[in-house]
Length: 190
View 1 (cartoon, rainbow, N blue to C red):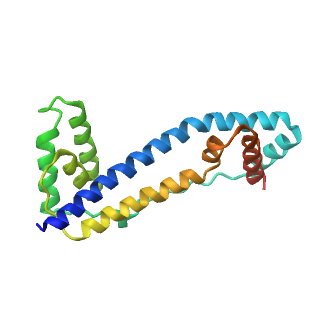
View 2: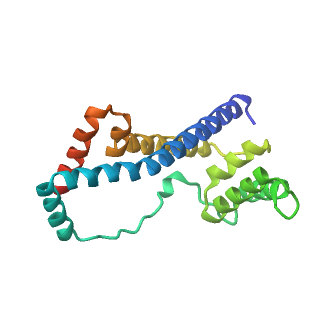
């Protein structure tokens, strides 16, 4: 394997791990802050009964639409039965991490991550777990593009999280918090 290509692979895996960790941190932070944000929204609706009335009227007229989510297959390399590289890497991961043979929580978590990735056809995650375990990998050129795509997907998700009302509310000073809540209510009513 070309040394420069391997260095690029290693760099991309590290970047992927960082942006994934950053995304998970921000997502958890917002999940916890949502409760406080919605409590503040409710306080405003109580303090301004006419606004609360509009909120209730609008809520009663909203039809809940369930949408089925599908994963974007462009972010994945499909694992086929012919894909001996991925199968070999997965077997190497299992040997190093299987809970029946290895009693180490971190390694067992990597086993679960790799198994889930293998079952769903997520080759990028298989490569990421291999990097975590320092398992030597052989890869096709398109894996670098798939990793870059997954990094960009996480960055897009982070940008979306940063654009939410809850995120803006968390970062604002006390005088601006009510303005953000009122803007949120206005958005929901209109």
